[in-house]
Length: 158
Image 1 (cartoon, one colour):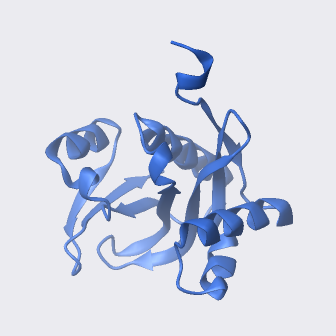
Image 2 (cartoon, rainbow, N blue to C red; image 1 turned 90 degrees about the vertical axis):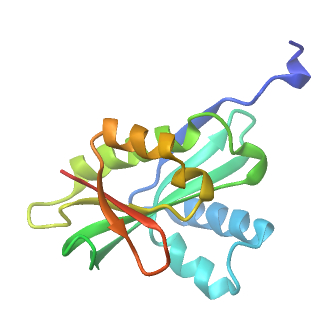
């Protein structure tokens, strides 16, 4: 395989809490990919960064965000987890690695009395496949059911 045809490698850069530079990079990514309807939404979400997903060429490929919130399906306070990866970088087990590293970071950094674990919903259709659920279960995640939007909810406690 020639150098020009190889798949990029990725690295995850901790951003919890995010620096101003990390927030600016995330906002630029979201704006370029038209993720949010308003720049205010991107600004607010940038405060929730946990990791930047960077390609080996230095380009930002995606981000992981978390929000300390009450999850009705869980019945408790959790870290609500989200990931955005540019469409051209959605491959392999990148999102699984990002989820695992975010969980480990939050487990280490969450103070006593803080959120009880990490909560996610399957907004992405690929994550609704049976194999994805099997993988999450093997990794210690517990299926809580389906939310009103038809998304499967998962929780992994610390």
